[in-house]
Image 1 (tube, rainbow, N blue to C red):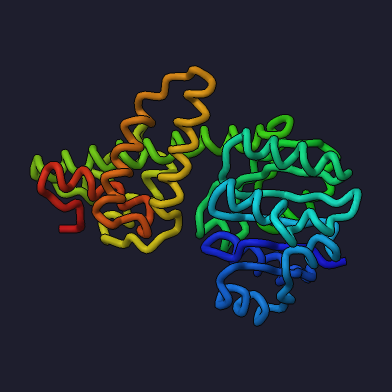
Image 2 (image 1 turned 45 degrees about the vertical axis):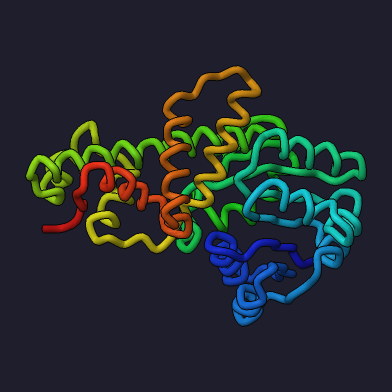
Length: 294
């Protein structure tokens, strides 16, 4: 039986292709006809949302935000309109835990499962099939999804009940985006002080300051390569979700609040479609320097 796959963007497109390369039959949907055509050329079949619900017992979604997920599932002619009892929807989008639990409860009423399984690893991880999945939901539902998730990723972990995957993703985004900001600030400081940023990078990468974020983003910054693997716009949305969720829980998040304003500034200056390594441009503007190879 075919698997449904909805959302064929920077992340979803290569993830779907990995499933196709392993011989899985996919019914696909995206609002972008070109993205659908690429998937069809790779072996998928184009479909509509309701048909995916009717014909697929497992449906994956990876979409820009929670409102879009809910519309795709529960809107007129949405997936849930034709979803059979015993089916499972796996949402790999970055949304709030409240939105994940809403989807879980609505699908539970009609006898279908829902797993929130957002990912970390960016576009390179999506292409190489090395993403990390952090899942929330029922263990038996995750086990049915595991063979597919292990094609798309190298790590699949059940964090807890419904919404737990989304909590883990927001925690991930706090760490990743604040680390990019700190790396940016540090290298703007180094350049302003007259040091070669490449030499500084080589000097510190093997010590305690070394990190996956440093290794992934600093070379891009030095090359001024901001083609998106993870768009600033998506991370702007994720940090907004962090603030909304944290405030609802009475958890102060001062670093993330400041980070949101940094991202808001980058929005004003038209950087939202760039990779989040482009956060460095905010700090460069403050100090009037550019972090690049000398």
